[in-house]
Amino acid sequence: MTAASKVLVIGGGFSGMSAAIMMARGGIAVDLAEIDPGWRSYGAGISLHGATLRAFRTLGVLDRFCETGAVTDGLVIRKPHDDEVITRIPTPPAPGVDLPGNAAIMRPALAAILSQATREAGVNVRLGCSFAGIVQDADGVDVSFADGSSARYDAVIGADGLYSATRQALMPDAPSPRFMGQAVWRAELPTPEGVDTLNMWLGRGVKAGINPVGQGRSYIFLTEDKPENDWIDESELLPRMQALLARFPSPILSGVSAGLSTDSRLIYRPLEGMLLPQPWSVGRLMLIGDAVHATTPHLGAGACIGMEDGITIAEELLARASVAGAFAAHEARRWERCRMVVENSARLSEIEITGGDQSEHNAIMGRSVVALTQAI
Image (cartoon, rainbow, N blue to C red; front, side, top):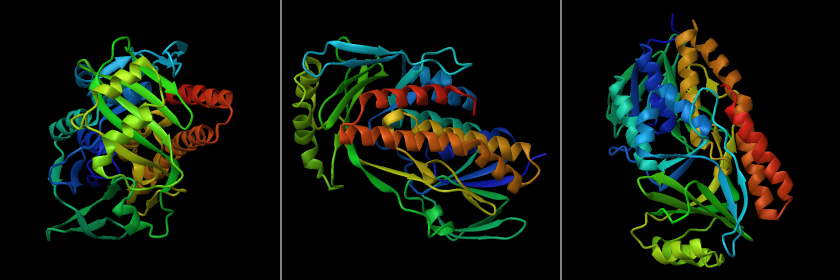
């Protein structure tokens, strides 16, 4: 008994691929439409919570991740002047996963792992494909595509990200993502000596972190307070990132700055967030991932909750007799967890910007880490 025999997933990111993999393995015929003909994933490294490793295990890609990425234990907070260790914060494993609770990988490497698993699951991947129209009735959904083709589905899953075209089509009055007053800079580098897990330095108006991503490589991130969401030209990325690093006399960060170049995969991204009020579905169409709960990276859980969305929507469609019942069960499972991540991440950002209570910051981090280890 399944609620659907044929499903369309719009968007080939982490959330969409997770949904497609799980549905296809359960026997649902899945089309995945990805607008980018190269199915590319941009960005440098991505930090992951232990709960993400649990999602990888469910998706059947944990071994591949461990071969390519890095799994480490704990968070080290250092003084910004001399690198002296202030504290070490444990990162507990998620139940059922015999691995520490901190991990990282390069985004393109993770995308390659999941895209391979998507094809292996038997998903019909349509690259360079976007929808042109969606019309649903009581029994199904008719989708027309930009290439002139069309197909009918029992359900459609919109997983096309922060600026989701599916959301705009389904919910034109939905709130827009909002700029959070911070931006993040990222770059790839050789792992500095003495850095064997996630290390962070807290400064005034800027926070730095280095996380190993495997194979002797790491990525650095700089979270900068920014009152305006201004455009940064690509030619300015290197000097502006080095100027931010110059705020830290840290020997480790000074060495990193000296080694950066235009070949370091420099990335700049304003931080935006959004929590779409329920319902997340309209009839037989459901939104998942960043299309409904985009979060800042302060908890390292954005990719995690998106992939969990993909897993739970597949589980519910495979277990329920109706699409409506599956969608309702999915939303009931996901709302509180996703709300917690989005709102707690936003509060951490606010505390950093305003110079708020560090004890509150630490308490939110601690509660959130524990909550993320709970079953989904």
